[in-house]
Every structure is written in structure tokens, then in C-alpha cells.
Image 1 (cartoon, rainbow, N blue to C red):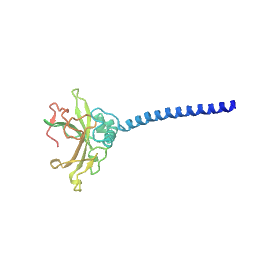
Image 2 (image 1 turned 135 degrees about the vertical axis):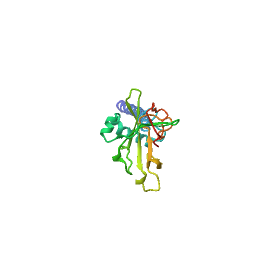
Image 3 (image 1 turned 180 degrees about the horizontal axis):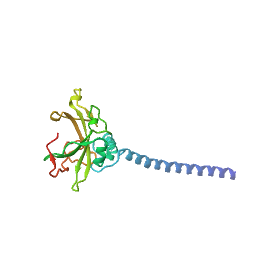
Image 4 (image 1 turned 60 degrees about the vertical axis):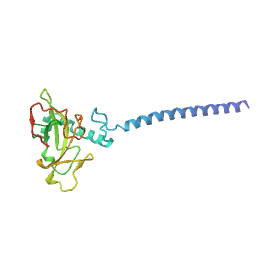
Amino acid sequence: MPKTKTIFERMKTMTRCRVRIAGVLAILCVFVCAAKSQTGSTVAGQVPGIVPSGFGDAIDRDIMTIRDATAKFKSPDAAEAAGYKRDNNCVQHQPAGAMGYHFQNNDLLDTTLDLEHPEVLVYEKMPNGAFQLNGVEFLVPISAWKSSEPPRIMGQALIKVDSIGLWFLHVWTWKPDPSGLFAPWNPDVKCDGDAAPMHH
């Protein structure tokens, strides 16, 4: 009989241990799942003033895709080597702000819009004379676009400008724009006297 009691006691002890372990694992699961949930809401990463954009995770991922694809063009020399040619001086429209310098790849001018291959890279000349990549611009020639609906990318309709024969959309992927991610003009971009007539 004493041996029987001892076995029961051991079984009870083991059962209590298993319950405690299960409880600990359940608590750990709660913390791990919560951490994963928080990470999932910022899968696109964090870029102060740009991501999160306020347009949702899908747009945030698109922004990061563009940034990944254009990071190699931080230098305009690299952009020119890849077929992007500077086509104007600094473009501004005060008091709304400026766009900056456009480096355009005419080989990409068609009806296809591709996050990883924007038609234009937009730069700003800094006080030290260096060029800073601020964003991109997507273009579609009006003459090539046959649909009655405007071309779209990132959920946004491109803007039609008959005077230059283009549909366009700016995306400020490298420099925050107080006027908005897709705003044509950025009040924080300066031309410093090297300004061209309004481009859009």
C-alpha cells in the first residue's frame, strides 16, 4: 500500500508540473504572437516621414520596392549610365514648391508602369553642389494611351497634362513631402536660382 500511494503521489506531482509547463508555454505564445502581429503591421519597414505612408501596407510595400530598385541611383552618374538623362533645370512652381531635376529614361516611355523601372528619377541640388535623389516619376505618353480611363499605379490615377503630352505621377520615396506622398510639388525642395519654367 505505501508503494501504491507513492506512485499516485508521483503521478499527481507530474500532472501538476505538466499543467504549469503548459501554462508557461501558453503565456510565451501570447507574447510571441503579439510580437509577430506588430511586426506584420510594419512589414515594409520604417522610413521617417515616408513609411508608414498612411495609405496602407500595400502602398508601403510599393514604396519600399521603389526604394530598393532605385537605391543604386543615389548618384546621377549611376542614373545616366543606366540610360536616365537630365532633361531640364530645376523645376519649381511657387508657392507650392519644386519638383527638382528630372532624369528621364526615354526607353521606358510606353504604356507599361513598373515600380522597379520608373521613367524618371527626381533629384535636388544641395548647397554643396551634390545631387540628392528625392523620388521618382511615372510617365505615360498621352498619344500611346488608348483607354478612356487614366493609367494607374499604386492605386493612383496619373495626371494628364496636354501641354507636354504626358500622363504623370510623382512619388516622393526618398524625401518626405509635407504636401503628400503623390503631390506634384514639394515645398521643402529648393531650386536656388537654377530654375526652369513649370514642367507640369
